Length: 197
Image 1 (cartoon, rainbow, N blue to C red):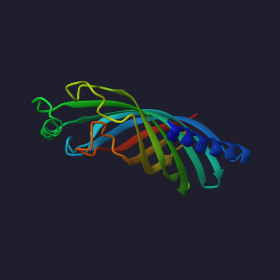
Image 2: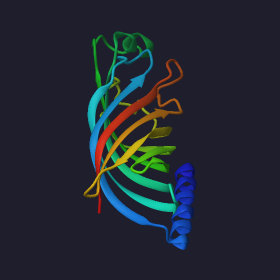
Image 3: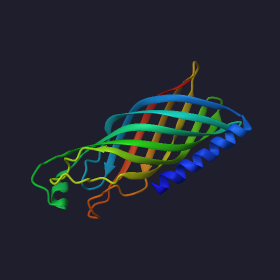
């Protein structure tokens, strides 16, 4: 929670700076496909098709540079391998499915590469808001409740206030809450459409 507070304080400083300079402020909505996977011996090494929905605020700090904080709701799924049963002494179910829901807060630097093309980079903190607790026999929380990630991608501004986005995010920490027998890390590819209001 302390890390989330620090992240929100950094974003508020960017907002204050942008408003003082008066260089531009836009709000918008976005959504699309969330292709995600959890890496580790316990899970199938494949991307799963899910979705994300969110809202963003874009603050132009100077010509060709801005800050874009966002709030994103996303779903993530994964399927265990038979290794999971042996690593964690679970009963003989060949595969189990994990379904997770996250509220993510990325704070992205938006750098103009061309008149309508932007490179976006920055940190993201995700809070797990729901977990299907069927992964282990005793119903324990298998995943940590928060995770930092690094996000990088492209933002394309089209006419009529429509935007396209393509991003990759890589989790920086181990999200395994069951122990240190296997390190789990998250990855996702987001492909979506944004509408600037």
